[in-house]
Length: 220
Image (tube, rainbow, N blue to C red):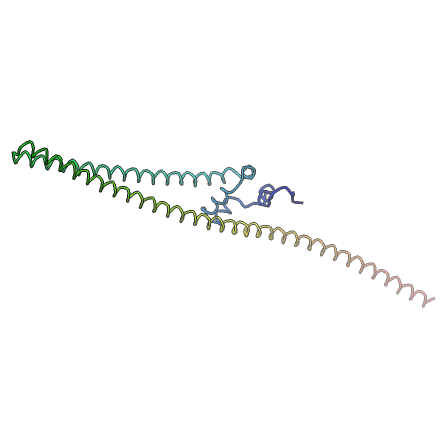
């Protein structure tokens, strides 16, 4: 009899009727099998074979690698933006100073040019900062969109996995029930055949005895 305090999944795991990892991968696919394994509680994981948990660990390691790769790409992109800004500012300064030195103009004019350069550099920095902020917002929106898409896909995959899991378990239970009923039917069929054969033999012996008695009485 199934214990009342155990959930259905734990019951099937502990009674050895849960599918093996190869069966889960074949019926559900590796990704959905990983989702099912990840949903197991600690008490349920104790009944799971080590190779099941290794499959889930590989999935988690791959997820961590993907996250680190995305972070590395974002960091590299930010450094590239900063390098482009610095290169543009330094190039602008060098160009204007070379023009000033070649023209041989006065110190006042040099100060004015420096002031003009500072203003233009400030404007350029503001523009770059705005572009940088805009880029960050776009990247944030893209990552948020990707996150919600992945979350939606995960929920759909999880629901599908639960449905397939239930279907798979029900198929195994139905097969077990069918095998049990077939064995019971075979047992009672054999028992009935033995009873019928025994009764027919008894009836046959009784009829033979009655016929012998009738013949014996008639002869006497």
